[in-house]
Length: 239
Image (cartoon, rainbow, N blue to C red; front, side, top):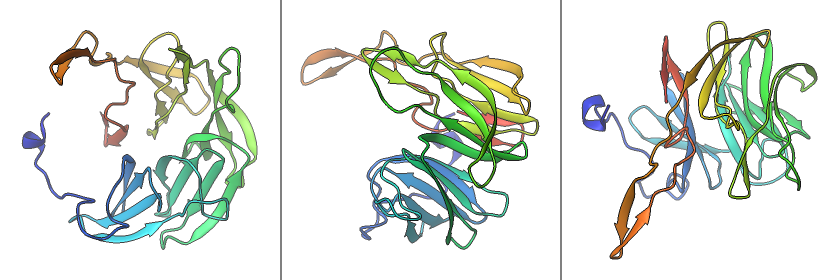
């Protein structure tokens, strides 16, 4: 679908407010009648109404309660709050945007409320040698790990390691994208960690090229999700 077919409802991040201007949007979520945008520059979370009016920023750069150094993903909570996954943990905010709890000591590339707890993708700290498995675990809301649903060996391309990234709850479990050695796919898991199905995802841009300053340049296959994000509307996945 093109933007013309969908219809642009509102634009974000183009006004004069310094906090409103978006440097590089990483993720976005609806929360009631608000839209939360995760940005690559602090404040990490920008809150807009559905007409695109900026309301406030949330979560500064730092190591204190509610702060983060490298944000990775957003997710809504059942009570209308928000979960911010980042390189050193998870921050939880309530429906009034007040900070509720920090879970630290894990590199969380994604977290959602599902299956009776907090399902979290834990990415190992960077190191040398072979890729280390990223694990999808079930946590309590206080951060205690109860069990592991799945482990994925990440892909290594051009001396870089790519870990699973986006997670989306379903009515029976979770769908996530494992950037794995065996190809691009979406994995549908139930709450016991059993695979219910797999959806192949074709790579984009392979073999294409563009001309830059008079020279033809190849386009590397981008890492799905592309441009960024995995969402669900009723029984439809948005990729």
